[in-house]
Length: 152
Ligand SMILES: CC(C)(COP(=O)(O)OP(=O)(O)OC[C@H]1O[C@@H](n2cnc3c(N)ncnc32)[C@H](O)[C@@H]1OP(=O)(O)O)[C@@H](O)C(=O)NCCC(=O)NCCS
Image (cartoon, rainbow, N blue to C red; front, top):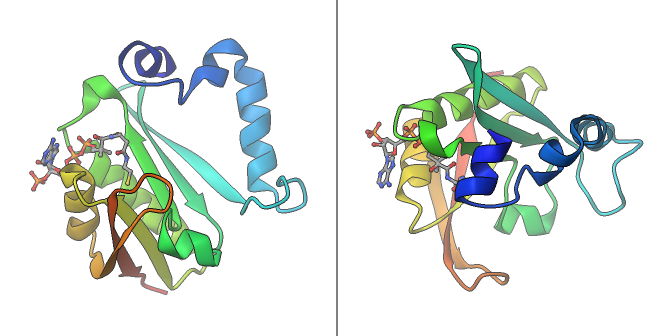
C-alpha cells in the first residue's frame, strides 16, 4: 500500500517504506496522550485488510480543538489507489465510527473538500448531517462540515 501511494499519489506512507518499525512507533506515540507531541491531539490509526492485503486506513482523533472542528474533524481515511470504488471507503468510515462509539464519543465531526464527491458520499451514507461550509484557511478550498451522532 505504501509503495502504491508513493508510485501514484504522495509520500503519505513514506516513513512506512523507509522504516516500518519507526512508523509503528510513531503511531503508538500518537495514540498515547502522554507521548503525543505538543499541539497534537492523540488518536488511533486503523488498517482495513481484505483478503490478506491492507486496502484502507482510518484515523480517529480522540477529541477536537476549535481548529479541528472547523477543518479536519475527528476522523480521516484513505483507500489504497488500486482499491478505490469498491466500497472500502464507506466500510472504513463505518468501522472507525464503531471505534469512536466504543470510546464513548457521542458525536463526531467530519469535514471534506466540497469537490471530494466520493468522500462526501461516504460521510452522507454513514449518517453525516451537514452543518456548514467554510473556506479553508490553508488551501482556500470550500470545505463541507458534518456531524454524525453515534449510538451510546
Ligand atoms: C475518498 C476515498 C476515501 C474514496 O474511497 P473509495 O473506496 O473509492 O470509496 P467507496 O468505494 O466506498 O465509494 C463511496 C461512494 O463514492 C462514490 N464515488 C467513488 N468515487 C467517486 C468519484 N470519483 N466521484 C464521485 N463519486 C465517487 C461511490 O460510487 C460510492 O457511492 P455509492 O455507494 O452511492 O455508489 C479515496 O478516493 C481516497 O483515499 N482519496 C484520497 C484521500 C481522501 O480524499 N480522503 C478523504 C479525506 S476527507
